[in-house]
Length: 634
Image (tube, rainbow, N blue to C red; front, side):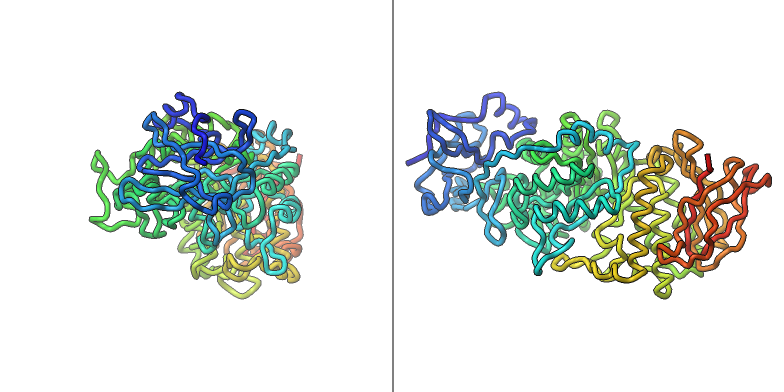
C-alpha cells in the first residue's frame, strides 16, 4: 500500500521560506515524524529530491522493497517528496530509495534529516521519537552569564571515543555523564568542547566527515542519552560547545553526494565542490535550499539539545576559492578576487540567524588566516562570529618554546608579537587536537631540555597562556602532560598521574583555571586593550618580560613576570603600578607543580624607586623557567 498523500507538515509559507533559503527549522518538517492522521498512528516522511523520478521509503517492514511505499512529489515545484505510512513506529530502520530522472540510477540514501542512525559500519537511518524531560531550566535561564564576553571561558576539548575507555571500549553517553562532569568540576574548566558528535561513518576522520547533520552518533548511545549527558553537565554549571562542520561532507554512496542523481548538496563545479585535502565534497552555498539545510542543522543542536556554542570547523577553507588549490584549479570571483562570496554571505547569515534566536550562545570560528572582522557583527560588515581561534598565537608560542633557551633572546618578538593584534578580534587561545597528531609529537615533548626543563617550559608556557588576553582551550591530555601523540583508538594515559611531573602539570592547570575564573583582571576585559599593559618587554638578553592584566576595578590589577630561561635571579627589579604590598598569587615554580621551589616568598613591599617608567618598583626573586603573578594586597 502506498503512503497516504493527503497529509503534509508543510504550509505554503514553509515552502516559500525553503525555496528562499530562509527556513531555519526544517527539522520540524523534513525527515521522519511520528504523527496521527484520522486516528491512525504512523510516520510522515519528507525528503528533498527535485531530480527524482520516484522516491520510496524502504525498511524491514517492507523487506527493503522500493515498490511498496512510494512517496508523492509536491505540486509546488519545491522538489519535496512526502507521504504518511501508518503503523510505523520509533526504532525502525529506513532509507530512501531514489530513482533519478537524470541518469536512471536507483540510489539508497540515508535521510539527511534523520534524528538517529545505525551504528557504523551500518548506514540506515532510524525513526526516533522520545520525549526528554529537560532538567536544566535554571542553566538555560542564566547561561548568558557563562557565555558573556566578560565571563571567563576555559574550554576542555575532548574526543569522546578516546578520553577514557573501559574494557577497550569507549564510554557511553550515560557513563560519560558522571566521569566527565566530575573531572571538569575538579579541574575548574567552564566549558567542554566535543569533537563532532554528529553522525559520521569513518572513525579516523574523528567526526569531521559528517553524514548525519541532525543525529548524535549512535556509537555512544541513543539521542536521549546524549541529552542526559547535557543535563548532567548543565546541572554542574558546565557549558557545552559542539564542533559543527558546514565546510564539507563525505562522498559515501549512502550520504548526501549525488543525492538524487544530481549535485544537489555539493557544488556542481569541481573547483568549488570538491576538497582536495580531505577528498570530500563541498556544500553549494549558492543554493538556497542548502543554506536552509545547514542553518537548520545549527539551529537543531542549539534548540533540541541545548548546546551552548558551536565551534565551526575549517572556516578558512570556506572563505577562499583557492584554498589548497594550485593555479588553474580555481577561478576568481566576479570581482576578480579569491574570496568565496557565497560562503561569506552564508556564514554571515548563519551567525545572524543563530544569534537572533539564541543570543546567549557563542559561535567560534576555526579560521587560520588574516581574513578581517571574523568576530565582528554582521551589521558592520563582519562574519558575525562570537570568537575566533588565535592560530597565530598558537604557532608563534609553540615555535618559541621549542627553541633551546640559550637562543630565545634572539626571538623574544615571537612571544610578544601576538599583543600587536590581540584585540583585532575576540580571540580564543587554542592548544587543540591538531597540535598533537601527524608526527608533531605531544606538547611536553616539543619542549627542549631534560625532563625537568621540559616540564618547566610547559608550566611557563601554560602560565603565559592563561595570563594572555583571550579565552582558553586545551585538548584532553594537555593538562596531564601526555607524553604520547593522541591516538583516537586508545585512551589517554591516565596512569601518568602516578608520577610527580604529570601530577604537577595537572595541579598547575587546576590552579590556572581557578585564577582565570576568580581574578577579574584575567577575564573581564579579555577582548579590549583596556585589559592589558606592558611594563617591560625589552629585556631580551635575559628573556624576561613583565606585563599587567587589568580589570574594571584598578585594585584588581595583576603584575605578571615571566622568565623563559633556566637562569634564576636572586634579585630582579620590576616596575609596579602603585605603592603597597603585593601577594604572590601564582608561582609556576612551586614544588606542588613539580617546580624547583627556588623561592617560597609570598609577599613583597614596593619601594619608592623609579623603574621601567613607574614611580614604584620592587626587587623580586625570580625562579628558573617560571612565571610569577603578583596582586596588590587590599
